[in-house]
Image (cartoon, rainbow, N blue to C red):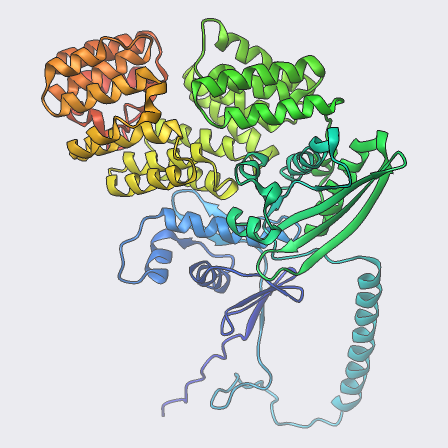
Length: 623
């Protein structure tokens, strides 16, 4: 006789920590606050939670989430990143999703299944051995159990009520924030710096809170957020919330009224007033930073508390010089970089103990260096760490030097990881760290870091160019062109985008478009860039005379890499390797890109090329 099958009742929800996951309702809840998730990330969370404690391979996840489709593994890591960020936003920082290297993922915290009561019609739970039997001896025990449960429930409710009255729960669902320059009420005069200076200070300190993505001041200034309506600025900056406020000075005191505003609906999530003596502005910065951080998170670690209240400059003028220096440095052109050096040096002169200014000067000296600039860059970066060893910017500056100047990839990776451990929102560290993956031949890892840099600073033209380059290295030329045009939509004069656009066109074989892209008026400020572009276009067009003529005016270490690109395009392999050897001898930073750059595809497979990659210590992304 066939036994009737017993169908297992599916849980209505899963609970872990303070979270409740309801698959049928497509809802993740922290306490009583829904946590928004993209559809695919939500499905991944359900799949992992249902298999809590067990390894789920990458292949299994890809097949379950994208059935019948071919997708890259980077889609998995991106969704895991989103889930980790959502799960640690309002909780205690547990590692909910464990990575099993090269295999997959495991949901690593205990999960409790919650079933609907009563079970749905047509489903039966497995019968207990004594089901349907009323044993009189059990009635007193049942009564005592009911009383015990009632008392226990009352105690729990009372404890919850008492705790709720004593502690304000954190705001959940806010994972990214922009601090807008605060508006000065009354006469502005010489105090115009104060609103931006306070915003920058709060931005810098909130960046050290691991559960938040904080937009950098440079992007906010580029947006001209001082004159923008808060919600419009928040939408443009692609954040969940904006911090806005007003500053008023009167009678030797400074009052700040701050509001945290939800970008999605304009609701005020938190507000507070701060009132200090005019001489205690730095106390004001500490108070605002810590209050906002605690409003957004359930707790701050000891390290986060210390960094939120970190050291700061003693001079408002030093603040202003530093902010202007970062503004010019972010333009990544030679004239702007030289202005940035002057401004960072001025900030240091005004305040010799200002660690951030030293880190800024280190970065500015590393770009377009004169003889002696690189050793000095290292010296001032180390000075920054002497003043503040928890300064993410200085660790990243030294990582950049280790990577592109020393070719010491292990030290560079260690320093970038340290910078990001200190400040996960530091977009430039993610941007530079991407190249540690690229030199190892890991284009997927490099692209993932650039994505994280863009998440932290979506309006950065420099990061936008590097995102386009990752597409170029992946031989996705049309996508790379589109990405460069998006950068130029933000800043039509951004030199790096204008420089790489003709290179992408020529590599995809569109000589006409490359020729047009080589001659915009904005390129004329950098004659070397124009010559490089013209030489490359002429070489791919087969015009040897014009290509060599354009190269003749280029000097410095980068000349040898440009000459090798031209020679490779003309089919002169021996000449190309001669030029590359000279670039290797001079340790040109561009040599680190040989393993990825499509311009050298014609040389791959040649033993000389493979030997050169080995000596530099890099790998090809196409191998």
